[in-house]
View 1 (cartoon, helix red, strand yellow):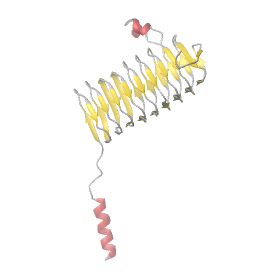
View 2: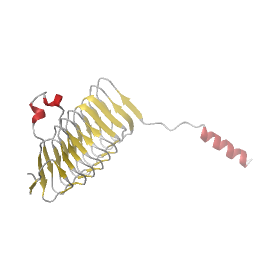
View 3: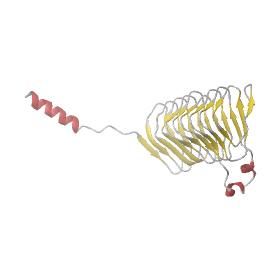
View 4: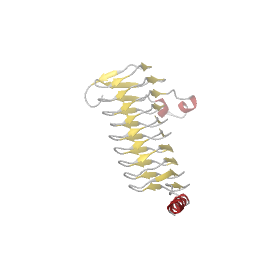
Length: 220
């Protein structure tokens, strides 16, 4: 009898309700919001912003025309936008890559990025952030604030001819700042002219294509 009861119990567990999967949210027009402290799957929209509130957990978040904001303590597997900025607060964790085409990328104190950070036209500003991958831009500047660490390469790529012909923005000289107590463990590779400022307390790898200018104080 005990064996029969045990068998029935195991069978009931096997056919019980499946564990609910986190909800995906997808739109064409309109903003998407992940509420504070909740868990979601993928978030996507075409024309609209993506807002991830404090301590929420989401999968990949993407938009075409819109910004992505991610509040303190939130987590995501990846962030991507074409025309819009990515703005993150403190203690934000992104396990994968972060990409924009026309938009800035900013991350606050205590954040961690598991993949690469890349943009074409946009400033990258990180404060006290750990980047396990590399950083790549074409026309944007890079500002690594106090305590930021980049494990991979920091690269400024050469602008394609079709971009240069669009206007003066693509002809500006990008400014690269490696701030106090920051570190780039990989190479610093510059395929175009840049202004490279490295704090006297910062640590960097091999530099290709630019001459570092050392500075003291908070800003060059």
